[in-house]
Image (cartoon, rainbow, N blue to C red):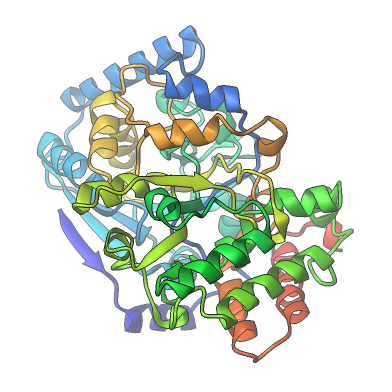
Length: 480
């Protein structure tokens, strides 16, 4: 396998050629607009059936077909190129890709792009008809229309693919457009980007997980007085800090019932939304008090695991499986837990059944090899490899009863505390049109606001302007 990390210089050159008006700014991990219930989580936790018996049987037949196709097709000597944002494949696909190369006698050219440059580069590749055989986007029910814009032109139609049954029904909306299946989404179903905290440390200091913003301030004050960074915020990554604003979409919807529908029909704006302004103000207050870290804007997540293990920090927004990563990579004996982000006095779970999704490029010179790769990665053997080789996954949200999941006790404990009402609303970036496309720009504006370069409402106005531009590109009638 050939691995490449495309340089910033090349990305900049490609951006110059980018067609105007295409949405960009993907983050490494995020997610979508259909609701997940506590019962669904519990069912997966206990290893019960995922999907109907018919679906499971069909999925098994799918894998069998994928494993035997090689006998009928000769791909020896071909090269398969994959364009992906950093964090979406990483090392967890290495073993599966190596086995694919050996099975078919091919070479896989994996081109990994920095997250803050990926969206622009992808648009350039698509509009200049020079895309890799397989490309990825951060998908949700609106992303294909806003990011790919014309999937019939750029994407292979997988509507008849036998592996379709491997994906749960609630993930198909992020992979389909106009009744056709274009994408494959293999992602987890863990609590995604909630607050992870050191439960042992909290107990020693007489602290409890905060449920309101005022409680959060008091917890941060106590931790800071002990010389501990309360909330580790890796602002230099570019994509992580916007999570604090977007993951609490349920709070915005509860504050103004029907807000999502109004935003999607151009009947409401981000600007002048008082709760959104308040959340940005609270975030800035935490930053101003040093509770996000002395230099959170210049800090990345490279050493975040060790910072937790060494007790240099106490909390962070992270996937629940980050707990497993801390335990696996360090010698800490501390216990960790999860709680809902309390900015805006939020009480809602960040429901988000979507994520990084791969597509086959219609302009490829070897479409059958592309199709074979999609079938190959959806076999039980491949899915198990992907799960086992990822420190940030404890499960995969797929219809495959043979898959050995690795749910954490901390995940099970946390999910039992939630009600269906708390889990009914998707995160803001995936429940509203064109929002996720400008994730990175929003993050830049958050930094500008926190450093006194712009006002909170101007951050929201910029999002409105960007969404309007994306709507025009998509010919959305609500914006005409």
